[in-house]
Image (tube, rainbow, N blue to C red; front, side, top):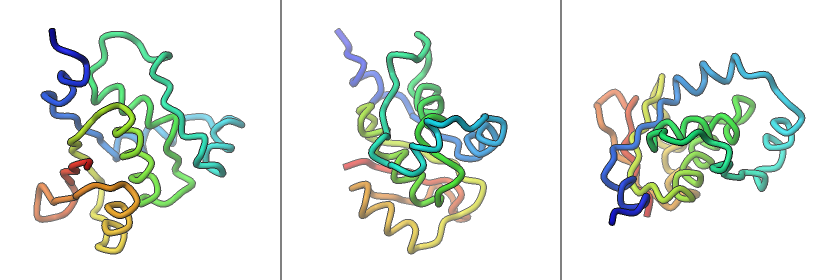
Amino acid sequence: METSVEASKKENVVFDYTSFLSASCKHKITFIDALKALLPALEISWTSSLPIGLTESEKLQMQALKVLSTNISDANNMIRLLRLARSEHIDNLLIRLPYSLDEEQLALIEEKSDCRISFVAENGEALNVCIL
């Protein structure tokens, strides 16, 4: 019998940061959203409220809307995203960005998230992240 963890390891999990930024612009800010932006300790995975039948990528995208914020830096959002992915037992993640991050941001993300980042394309707008 295949467990959900085994299934998620086989699936290529993709997070589209551009879609997140677009969806965030349409998302109305709530009091809880403001608290989460101020207190990163409120980074909670809300898996029980997710619809059944979603792919791992869709689940991660929906949860990210609750955890990430356009009011903080891209590097901090990536750190939060990778912590969320780790809590969902995702070992590898492809992140599509609208622009490349600089070396300092990437080093901070690797350090804080305990991961390894490599470029998928030369332009740096697609990252392959291996969560250690």
